[in-house]
Length: 168
Length: 184
Image 1 (cartoon, rainbow over the protein chains, first blue to last red):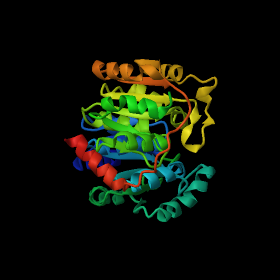
Image 2: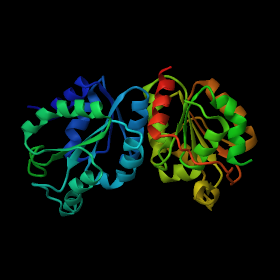
Image 3: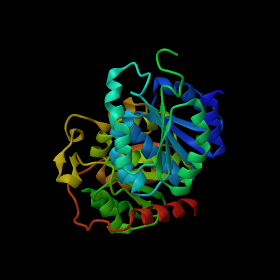
Image 4: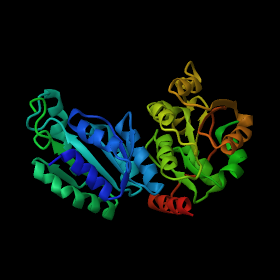
């Protein structure tokens, strides 16, 4: 299975046509795939809170958005999640590279990894963790759930899911 | 002129457009001067008005005017390259540059000292960047709307705030009526 293609297919199938990204090595393939899709407008952001602002505007303009980012961005976007996305009750699927988990080569990444789920839980953000490749089968249901309830929803994808980091 | 005087003067232009308004006193002033369903008031999240407006402009065809501030642009300076590289000709970013953080007590910003936001916007690649005097705002804004081209306006004006109550409208109501205005 080509995970990058499967993810892009699920986004398109759920009518998601506005995707902002902040890069990560693990996400490089899916970002490239999205960039090549005609039915998705891809707009890279300089920072993840900026990206969430873009997504909020796109959604109010009638497009279904998504953001692709690293878990370090949870630290950057706590205020935006609480006072924009949640306060105005907006849907936002967040496909997140879960750095600092098993098979992570960079020690500093672990420092945010240990806070990631706790922060998401503190914000009452529904959170899913993809560890095995087959976990991607749930993505379609998660996207439907996100636009059903108008909430930000986190999909954490770790190095094992992507087939390793640095040793792949 | 201070911001509220400018907003009063341009209210007839803003009334028929989709407006995304900056957090704090700017939104309170616009709300008090001419509340419209087509106004999206930011109640939190400093810095993101320009980003919300750009997403909105890229997603649908109606003109979008963002009322931003120099302090908020400085908070989210990364917005300017994104705006420059994703041209939406229905997008006008109007930066009310009074050289101060108005909502927090008029502390000076760097834009009121050595930093030129118009030059920053140009260096980021933005086209149609116009710095203007407060008294010319209405004319410049109307011309920008009529041109059908993306614009970044930097309106140099005096520091100061009008006294208005905080907005107590529920955020979901603000958002819902705004979305209905977008679709109308």
